[in-house]
Length: 92
Image (cartoon, rainbow, N blue to C red):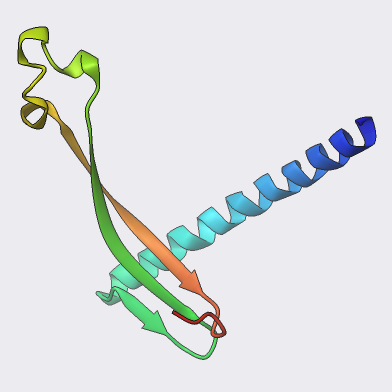
């Protein structure tokens, strides 16, 4: 059990480091696309697509008790970018 746990923790740490690096590269790709004024880029190396998405959330504390049925009036919209990176072999 300890050996398995130790391996898990080692790989988890490596994965966290790689996720940090991927996040930086994803951010750089987003910046480069925005500088070019484009939402898509494709080459022999791969492709990048920048999409905007939004979601609405509502917390009970955001709505007074007498207006709970009016969730739309008190909901919050969050807009965010989605960066999709694919290798050339990825089919969609």
